[in-house]
Image (cartoon, rainbow, N blue to C red; front, side):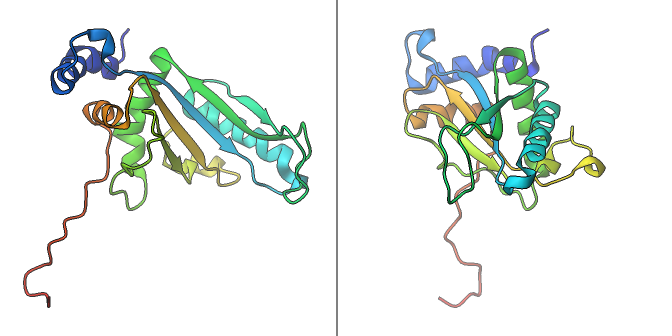
Length: 193
């Protein structure tokens, strides 16, 4: 069964993008390629192994896919990290799981962020990819609050086929991404100038 957000993309976002961006070929229309969810363990050396196991469990619970463990490539004495030691976890979502995760993120998870006013619109990398950080896993509905052992932060990277940041932003806006609106510079009535 096709996820609802993927159906929305095919039926209304593609024609709207083609018209707004003036693209002649339908294959030029930007699309979401994958979503990468990563988390780095910054714990002390003694509890790094258990912290990595917790991160793997949390990412698997949130995404529905088992993540791969990320290992340190070289030793760094200042951070007390040895080469070959587990330092985090990462999962790449594609296809149906990607669309379902994006739908849950836009409609359920992002509004659960405390004092949420929208995601920052300037977090594009210059090549049409968007990244945002989540500081607490408790905003995800899949996480049981009484089961949380430690606070885990995530980075979400939305990889698109867009050739520029403007095209990628337009794609994400049409998919329903909750970007922060620009602040209005007007002063309230009666305020001193």
